[in-house]
Picture (cartoon, rainbow, N blue to C red):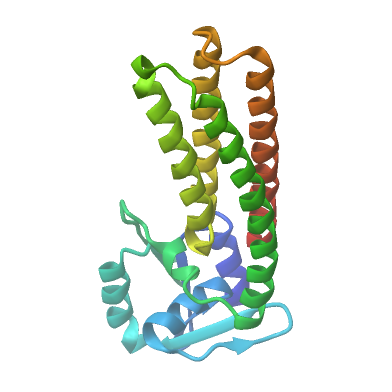
Length: 227
């Protein structure tokens, strides 16, 4: 347990960094870091009641360091009182830790995510149809604004579909919110220029508010599942 306590002490300070602790003639790592070691080296994981562990002989350390450098994964090596910390500008820890997901958890996670995504998609398609109908009477001289709105509508839909990628979900969800804010800006411009009336602007706004609320709820759900 002493090795695990050392691991947790440094892991709590460096969440996106692999931590190795020297224990006798082995280096050990735990929990999520085991997933990366299994992915890169096919080391077996031993599961205990409160944690998981994998390890390798000390004479393999150079091979491990070389592979982590190749993959650009931050790491810390704890050996007695000596601490070695290696960091990379483009740290890919999260990418590799999310590559290996327990199939049972993935199935449950995917089904929940699918339901959340399906509701959002259905509501957003209604939004697209209404806004498209609202702006179809724009004057021909305002083609730029109209095209930007159409592009934003469909780029947002694409982001919703792309959010099904687990490792990049929160990034795409954040981009959805940004796109929706731009749509709201375009609608306010349309109102100021009298291309749409206040009732249509208000209804479009209500559609967008609902999509924002659904997306934010999905983001919270994603965050809770990642903890």
